[in-house]
View 1 (cartoon, helix red, strand yellow):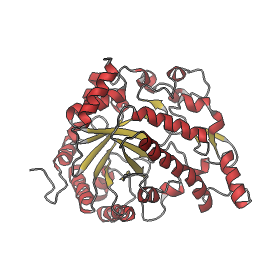
View 2 (cartoon, rainbow, N blue to C red; view 1 turned 120 degrees about the vertical axis):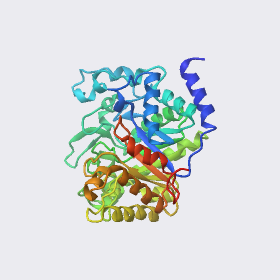
View 3 (cartoon, rainbow, N blue to C red; view 1 turned 90 degrees about the vertical axis):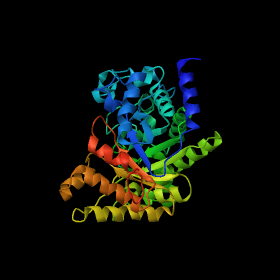
Length: 401
């Protein structure tokens, strides 16, 4: 039995004994975030990552499968030889191997198999964190399939191509994504989490590709409108919805049960940016069982009422889901207008462990299925915060006996 088959065997045995907790604590991680501390291209380094992450009390670990389209496992679809093509003028320095030397796509056994097997041995639920991007913000970590298929690149309203993403308007792109899904399903994930937070700066304004233009003209008889037009958003949204429907059908066709979670970003009392910018109708996807639950990745609370407004925003998601599970964020950093718990510390003057306890209690009180820690990097969750999270059991008492 070769090493990769051995790790898959360990994973299959472990999956049978893993059970999700009543108040689930999800940790979202990427091996890259630990690369300056551990040798993350090895089994030992992956074990060290998990040792560190489990200090938070996480009982589910979602491993990043890629940054942009730089894979964290041995991919047939993203041909490894093309990853080593620095002379391609579109592969700016940030698009080459992470740190210039990490080559996760070539590790044996691959990182995802190694990580999953490690979770199985420890009785920790595991899954995949799949960013909704092909480029980690603009030009970073572009993958070989993208660069080999410029005919599918997105375009703006002026027709200028943008190679940060290939459009789902093309059936070939959907087929490519489903082949990537097959690679992940081969590794037996329990959960696949699609992350709208990480969309690589892509929006519906980048979807003026020929198929969408032709569909618009056939439907309305006019040139395509501004990307803020609700009809344009809905037209693009049809192809986004088709992706999630295809994912659900593809998993079912393989006879597998895999939980599908969708991450929604910047929840506010006003505009739903997940719809107006991404064209993803998360409420419909949940209502029609295309996804099994929602991860709130960030909210936009009122600085004058930080905790009360946060509870209201969480409750608005709960009410829209009609009983579907949802998870609330415990995020260590502030980024791009997305407030992590340091924002609440500044707004209230409270210590971080007190803020995190308050956020946990809000999640419990609004009926969340648990929390998502986004993202667990090396030592970014302090020992005091880890202790609070680890000891919180989701009951009114709030801590483990």
